[in-house]
Image 1 (cartoon, rainbow, N blue to C red):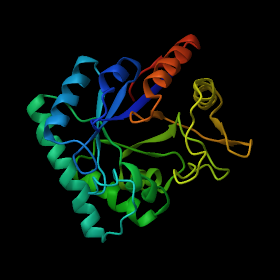
Image 2: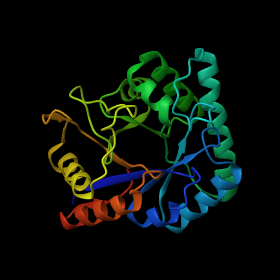
Image 3: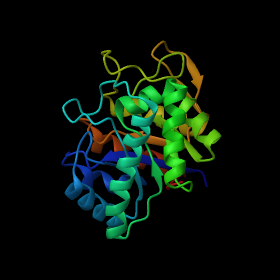
Image 4: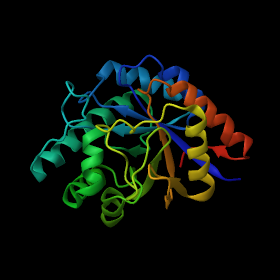
Length: 246
């Protein structure tokens, strides 16, 4: 049976975390830098235990005002400390709650910059490896973050997105463009099934490009997040696929 890991960004102050959890297998929990706080982390960890989800750290630029979606230029040392500080904060709470950490997935602008900036990707990967070399590094499929994660000695998970559109180069359409997000349930389900079964994705130009994904993300802050998650879950099961963490 083919297994598909469905992950979702959580602990970001949305009210639908609990409603999403029955349909996913992994949760990426905000560390308080772009959203959430220590209480939010604890509550989300408790929910993850209830639904037996794999738990990931979701570090970001320290930018609550812009939800971590504005590019920030940092020195290598500052970037290393930014990631390490969030890992340490999260790990302390997770240990207190008795929840193991499964993976790390950068958030927002940090994620997107590391997808194309090899130096940033290497710093993030090294910070994760130094903290815990057993953690899986989630990054955009085909990105520098995946390549540098492997180079650092980490297990990696190439990520695709259920609710985002893709450009011909295989990268995501920037959120600044009007067609960056899908809003149609049928289109989203079709895209996920194409990713899972054919390892391709159809871009905004109508052409299909290769996309080998180990994990598929549904954005928890999306307007149709629960609707999409339920439909994807149903469609994958109908195809005989198991929804399971890596």
